[in-house]
Length: 233
Image (tube, rainbow, N blue to C red; front, side, top):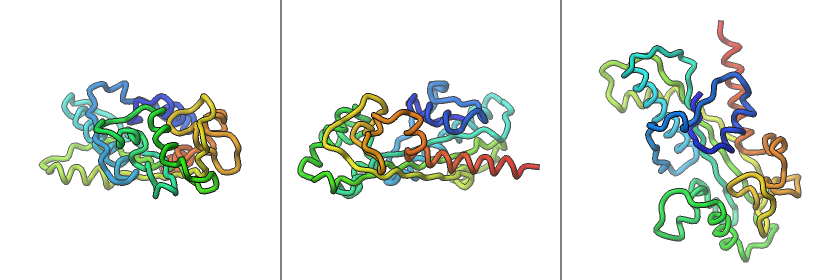
């Protein structure tokens, strides 16, 4: 399974939840992999785009070198972010580059800058109205083993997309007034999940892996994979 990220935090969480059923690779193992532009307006759109484009690239790579590979090769891609109700769902799909929206910069921006912009925008919003959630959508696309002869790129894309499965998860909480905690990444130091007083950056990995948006999406994926395996003859 190719995990379409170089983020070691994501990789660790995915490996911890899915266990040892797969050999996991990341984009660090494929330095020549294409960079996918995440320009879809939804988490599902971005996750699907990444998984499909990378699966097509891997399929072509195998074909070029005439390498036979099993049908149980997959690309796993996710898109996730923070939705703040007082900001009409922002930063949303722009979560990783939220600070760049303040300037002419492009690409992802440092976590500290993103957190600082979020706090500025929520400066006059009282704590009880700082409700928010982390949301995640995971796309799982098979690396098709059969070569599609005489097919247009559009048809080829449709074939991969038709076999892509989506899994979503959300974690409700609130945004506090200033960062707390040294663990985690992204907006973790500002986010307190419902039922807790600690931020994601203060909670241990074991607790976070049970609560997080990505963990919930991964549990759905795990159930799907186990169900698929049990249905095989």
